[in-house]
Length: 175
Ligand code: HEC
Ligand code: HEC
Image (cartoon, rainbow, N blue to C red; front, side, top):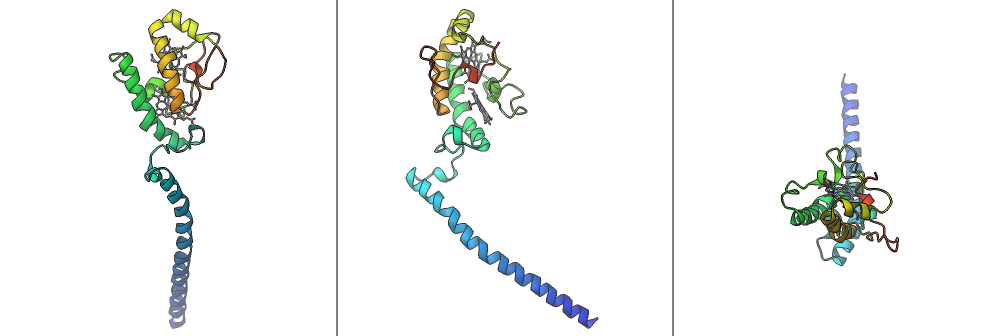
């Protein structure tokens, strides 16, 4: 009985000692290494970069999914909502993530283009859209495409020169 208790006591002490030793060493070094790059970024970009949602210093293409989601909420949604409402207050009063991504946007991991919005013909979408509705098409060409491209660090697609990376079909499905 006594031997057993003594053994147990030693065991418990040994475990405690191990845990203590294990706890004190790594955090000191770990803490130091993670702090250095953060400080460098904060210093270079005006102090607040550390915890900014959507990582404004990271290009869209290099953002993580989480950062993209935040960027959409912090930058894309307010800017696009204001623009669409300026174009047509009544129609876009309820503008939200769904207006672009569709009601099933979340279930589809916000993959774009969405099939929830108006489909456009693959060839000459602007011409077809102009015939359908000139006002909204001009708004798309002159405001939505260039401003959205900028928010995603991309170049607006120019059908004449066939240059640029962001256009109608990054949001609209093809017919
Ligand atoms: C004006 C239209 C528009 C609105 C509003 C919008 N998005 Fe997006 N979103 C896009 C487009 C276009 C892309 C694809 C960008 C690209 O080409 O990589 C995208 C991409 C994303 C991605 C990245 C998907 C991936 O596969 O990497 C996420 C996440 C996302 N949106 C979430 C949201 C959330 C959440 C909201 C609302 C807070 C929102 N979006 C509002 C147009 C929009
Ligand atoms: C950033 C995403 C995005 C891009 C890029 C974009 N659109 Fe749109 N477009 C929308 C949204 C959102 C609507 C409104 C959806 C709705 O009516 O439910 C819309 C509406 C339209 C409509 C009216 C559809 C209807 O049902 O009345 C036309 C036409 C149109 N877009 C054409 C274009 C053309 C042409 C381009 C390229 C030059 C373009 N769009 C680029 C998001 C986009």
